[in-house]
Length: 262
Image (tube, rainbow, N blue to C red; front, side, top):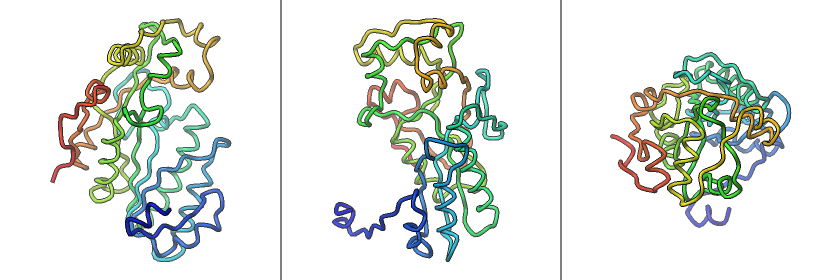
C-alpha cells in the first residue's frame, strides 16, 4: 500500500474472503480487473460472488475484466477449439471457475456493467516466480511418451497483461476471449524445448500408467486434458499483436512486436 500511495494512488484494502471488507468499493470502482483465484475447496467461488454483490450495491462499474482458465473446457482430445466450445470442467478447480463465470455472466446480462471474461492457459515469463519449467526440469520430473502426450497452451505474462488492458476498452462483453499464443505443441515437446533453451537435461518420458503411480494429482490433472486454443477473437476484437507469438521467443526473452495496436 505505501508503494501505491507514493504513486498517487489511493488503495482500498479488501479481502475477498471477508465480504464486509469490500463495502467501500461500492460506487467507487469504475473499471475492475478481477484476477483472484477461487478458494481451494468446493465447487463454487464465493470470492467472485462477494465481489459482484459489493460492486452491485451502488453505481456499478462500467467494465470488469475477469481472468478465468482454459480448464473450463476439460479434455478436448487435442482438438482445436474456439470460445463457443461447450464447458465440461473435469476438476473441482475448473468447476469453481465455471461458477465464477456464471456469476459474472448473469451480472453482465443486466446491462449495467460490461463483463469481459478472459480464458487463460499456462502463464509463463522469465522474471515470474515459477514462470518457467526450470524447477521441474531440475528435479527430472518425467513427461509422457509421444503416443499418450497432450497438447498444451501458453501465454507470456506480458501478453496477458496487454490483453487485460485492451479487454477493458475493446472487449465486446459476454463474449469470452482466449488469451493464448500461437504455439502448437505437445507438453513433452514444450519441456524438451525449455530444457534445450535453459541448458538443462531433457526430462525422461514415461507411460500414462507410470505417471499415475509417480506424479501428484495436480500434475496428472494437466496431463489428462488435451486441447488447442484458437486465438482469432483476441487478435480481431482486442486487436492484440503478440509480443511473444510462441514459447520459443518467450523463453529466449526476445519479443518480436510492441504488442498493442491503435
